[in-house]
Image (tube, rainbow, N blue to C red; front, side, top):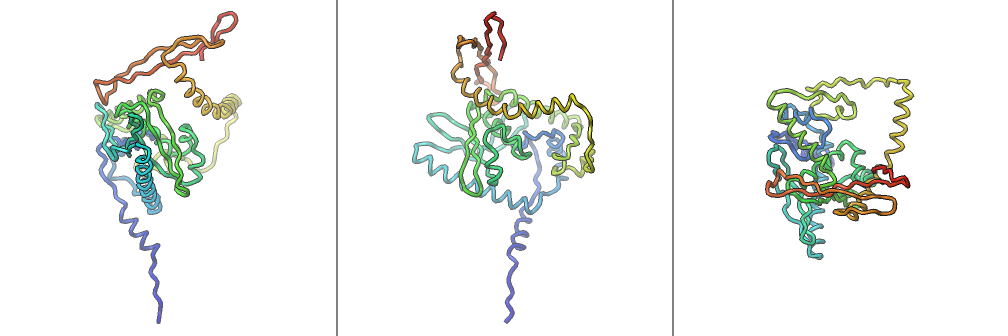
Length: 319
């Protein structure tokens, strides 16, 4: 008797392929607003029906990520109940008045009468190990967009604190990244301006300039209609001692950014709302108030510090 085996992997590939769909894009998605290519964001609104569908392999990754995040949500709820905490507002839509930004929040953690908009992601173990602080999200093209997404959720709900949870797909362990809205207001303003720029291009029926960046453009679903001016063959070499010196200094300073931000986060709560001397340092500041478009009746208030190093001659150097 001949044994005929089914080809299960092929059946699964067909099943995954049937799930690949392209839907109309009627707003500026929070999950995409951190993208560095403004032209791509305009294409999402004007040419969504011309997008190249993603691969079956990528559909596997998307489905696995969704399952991981659903499972983590269930485990979070169990853990929170034991500690008199809550995880609420799951998949609640967000809106910012005066913008076309939209999205759905994974949920909000309720802790000591505070509400923390929360975003959940999963990733492979190697990426998980390499992400240790919010600055590390710059390491990968897809993680660069993560902070923007959570900040938009925080801004929409006028919440000062937000939590980003990252799950290791292999071990199931999670990392927590805390974000303070007032520390990122310049970036939030940049995102709001990006939303306005998209609207202006839609009104004028124009497109932003091309990026022409091989690393960014090669994975873009609109590359076939954008036709960026790329040259993947060979690398030009330039003899520019001044540029080389600046690049060397840049790479030397890069690791210090993370350390600076960590120290700054420790200092901020100690000097908030105060003006005083500490050793050779004069610490001053002022309260800055900005209205929240999400809730017109509420305002965002934060302390803008100013630290000056005082020399013996009483000539200060500001930090």
